[in-house]
Image (cartoon, rainbow, N blue to C red):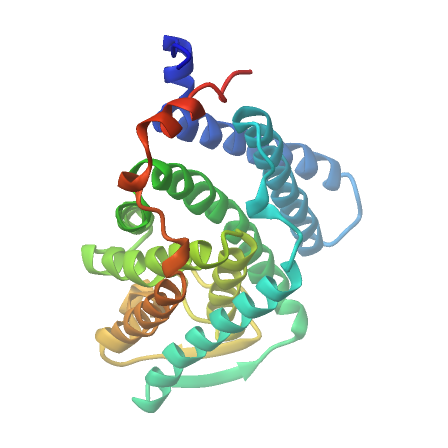
Length: 298
């Protein structure tokens, strides 16, 4: 067996790989936003369309940075962004996100808490569309593509799924009007669901599509608050009232009991379908693990 150097051990450390990956993607996102913003400000385009283009550029740059960095660092093909079955994953993920959000709002409607005030121009969806896909790409790369994927190699699927879900829920505690309950709801409904979606396909396009569709339908279509952030323009102007348990109160529908139940149920189904794709770190032989250590050199 080849001896393992200290440098190789440090480079192979999950913490090192996570930190470096996060830094690369954050830097790529910020640089893309800044440069694209300054260039687009010189044009005569409407502000909403400038933001849409800026979001597309920033998302593309983050994906490119992720692929380039981990292809070089881990010396492998980045299969989690494979174009194989991409249409299937995007369509299926979008449908799942739409259905889960519609079911959540439907419960509010049945409790006489959902009222449509007006139907707005289609152009009103541009801002929430931009926010939804940009955040979906960025957050899924950070949480599922980097944190969950790398932890899973060391800790296995179940423990990593739980930890990444807690991290995802905790990040939403910084949002206005957040509570421990709303953070727990997000951890269960989004953290578990999106992690399970990645396990099922081993492809990031699937959880990205679910994440996008959920957020867009909530804010861009139904005009509801998303994770306690202020409403943007939307296709429907609506009024949501009633018991906080089923409306989410000032945090929005993501903090509801029905959203948590529906998404948890979907997560369980995906995990059941993923039994042969789950990783058990204790089944790996020590020799195999040691051989991998030599990979991570620049």
